[in-house]
Image 1 (tube, helix red, strand yellow):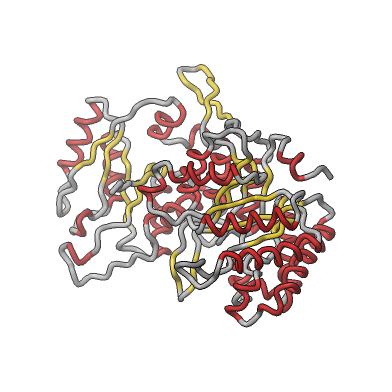
Image 2 (cartoon, rainbow, N blue to C red):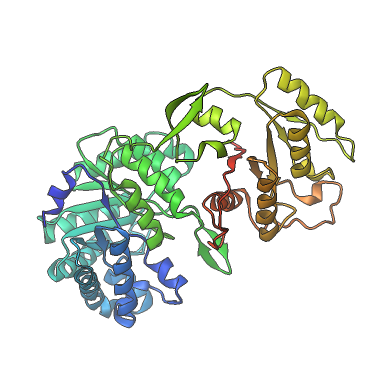
Length: 489
């Protein structure tokens, strides 16, 4: 097995693992800190490491993120620090041995969990000593790489780097800052300044993890790639969490996370993994997506052949789709790469929708590509968008974009009606959360909102993969062209 530094130099992405705490909690292991499971439920920890290895992870982090003596003192466990760290390394090594694969043992080190002086009561020297103690145990137990992760305070990350260099200057360091700053700061030069500071510390890999979802992570890393002489890492959370029954729930699908993993590798990320909320399924999707990629180069797009004027032309689309299933609007945008125009029609109250038919007919004659059919806009009572879209397409031949709102339907009805719309031949949908009922004709009506628009998009995307939102197979797949509205403010 080549050294980790030599592995980085191959130009092929190194896939890291995913979350420990959120996955173990989802499996019924409730304990704070989750590092203590190294002693109380070691088999569960080892088995999860093995699942990540089998999913395609190559860099396996120890379950020791909270295992500095200072942070463990919050739980009266500081006397267990050495045992937790030592056992953390053993469990990773054991999982690697069971897998029969070549992987790197990465010792995970997180912040001490208390603010540094002068704001807090922990002096920098105390934090430094705590890092030295933890890293010494991790290295002595067999860690081949050190991952310093989820540091908000750059001063504290500097202390951890200094401790690692003192204990084991030969061990490669991955230094990851987590960004909680607001968008205006992150849109400026701040991420670049942070990455430049870390590069000057002489670590092997610099990057970011946690806090921000994959989209914001991509923005940060893309800016940081201005310095091409350093290896980059990115370990985003599986989206932004929501709170359910007091627990943080991450809803990003494996496919969504893998899409951003591909983009991150394209802009220069060498070490790619995920953080809170990411499961072995997420890591498997990432590993499969990046396995044939070269860092810093575009990933090859799958090919699809489309018949045009009797001739076959090869076009790149984001995924291979049978040509006969592609809506005209989707074909124009993603295959033919044409500029398209759409017009939103005003939907009248009542049964008379002749104005919609007349408008669609006129717009088709003028070369407009599609018309938007709204769904109970402003919470006013109007005919439903599925019926109007179907009637419009049948009577005029004009393609429609059917708006579809989360307000009026529970998660069963949302998916059920999408299946019905597809069976009727409707292919384009625009997903919206929907104005609350209280602003419309019936303020006493219930706004359902089982799902919001991002999760309804996930549901529609699941139908496109042949499964429902709960991963139950449908026997066949839809092929909706899914669109949404974006509010930049």
